Image 1 (spheres, one colour):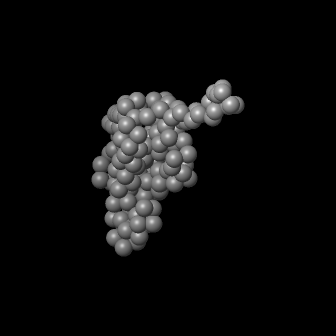
Image 2 (cartoon, rainbow, N blue to C red):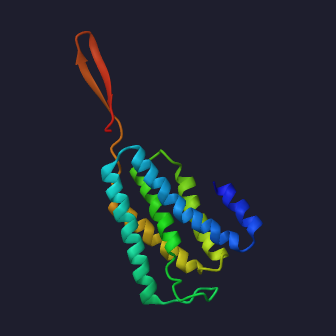
Image 3 (tube, rainbow, N blue to C red):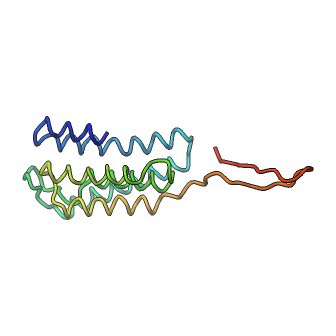
Amino acid sequence: MIGLLLATQGHAGGNGWNTASDLLAVGLPTLAAAYTYRDRDADGAAQLAWSLGATVASSEILKTQVSELRPDRSDDKSFPSGHTAVAFASARYLDKRYPGQVSPYLLYGAAGLTALARVQADKHYWKDTIAGGALGYAWAEYFTETRAGGRVSLLPAPTGVTVAWQRPW
């Protein structure tokens, strides 16, 4: 996926970075929702909704209060980067809720690429993306609980010991 986004950027000129950041800002929460749906994880769905909701709400409130001009001068909503905030919230949610199921290097790499793309697209300064990333990460850290994984038990049996593995569905 990251290779495809970089290839898109290379062929589309400066606009490719903007497209890449849009795709990542939609793709990461979609991936988080897909994992949640796959596992029929109602608690996780609520945690994802709270994480993303708080991230978007606080990002939009800050944009109206700070009123910083974007590098491309298109508007005064530069601080913080909402794309980067959503990407890092999604990455943290996946990493914390489903540890070991998706490489954290890929998750945070994709979120970091979102930040890079926003700067390269001339939509944000680095400080905007750093603040957005910290904001999204913090909300997901606050709202997300690590999902209980499988549990191994030793049970007495007539001829010895039975090993049982349980996993919540």
